[in-house]
View 1 (cartoon, rainbow, N blue to C red):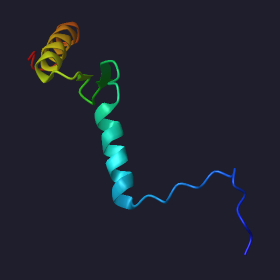
View 2: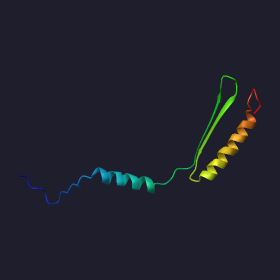
View 3: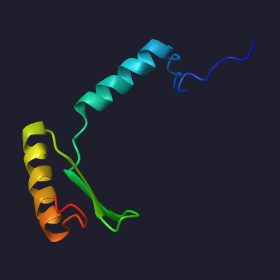
View 4: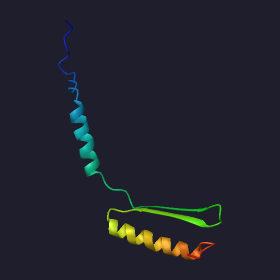
Length: 86
């Protein structure tokens, strides 16, 4: 049987699936959150109306809802519905 050199580092033991999942969960819980993200999409439908999609990501849901509502209102004013005016 070959002898291991005394200065050779030992390999760490293999981790179990449970240990790996725990490490991933800890990493996700402690990671730095990204800056807020916004996504606005304007498309025309068959009637010629502009369809508005506004998405905003923020840790505070109340803040996100306020921002989305304000953006939607501005865009709906700029792009009113064609047929019924609503």
